[in-house]
Amino acid sequence: MKSRLWPIDFLRTLALCLMILYHLIYDLDHWTNLNVQVNSPFWFVIGKSAALLFIFLSGFSYGLSKSTLKNGFRLLFFASIITLVTYILFPEQYIRFGILHFLGTMMVLSPVLKKIPTPLLGLGAIIIFGLSIIFSNTLVEGPWLLPLGFMYKGFVTMDYFPLIPYSGVTFLGIITYRFLEPKLKERKSSLPHAQTQVKKLPTMVVWISRHSLLIYLIHQPILLSIIFILKEFIPGF
View 1 (cartoon, rainbow, N blue to C red):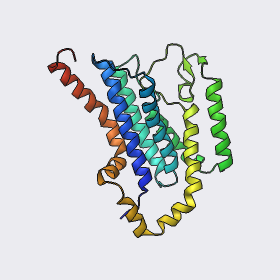
View 2: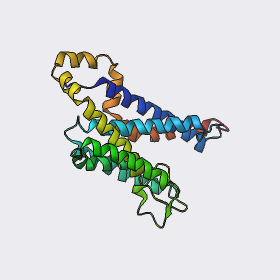
View 3: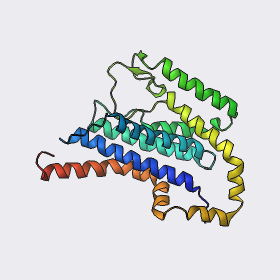
């Protein structure tokens, strides 16, 4: 039986549930006549919390995975499909550098990030967060610097997670893993204990965590399909 970290499975499942909830509210706000305010502070916090959890856990998991680079390219492949689909369906606000683009890019860079000393990663996170504040209102000409966080006038998108500031959250995930690594290795050496840890979570929670990418890819088409079906049968929906 492969050992798993139940806190990671739990937090990843929590992040996925929060994300689906936020996207449901987003869809209801944009595609129905219901009085739903997705831009309220409460739903903003829910959406950001889900994304930040995903990003942090992704950085933490670099130390656990032996195929981070391959997974990164896989994420970028699916991200390119999302860009194409949203460009066809929503050309004025299609996704150019959403969370999958970000996560895939950081995973591809992970072999380099793993070699950076912890103090430098911490300093890098501080610098990145600082740059995001300094350049928060800076606009540039053209879309070429969008991955770095520099927007142009009139830029609109449904999902945007640039390297600045979110790579700083990835760095924090890597640093956290390094601090916990000795305890994790000690835990891994005791397989019966590891199996007990997995059993603390319901099977469904572990399954959701393991299939988080699949759920991410299919949840919006499912939500939108349900909403548009309801619109056909419920007047004023």
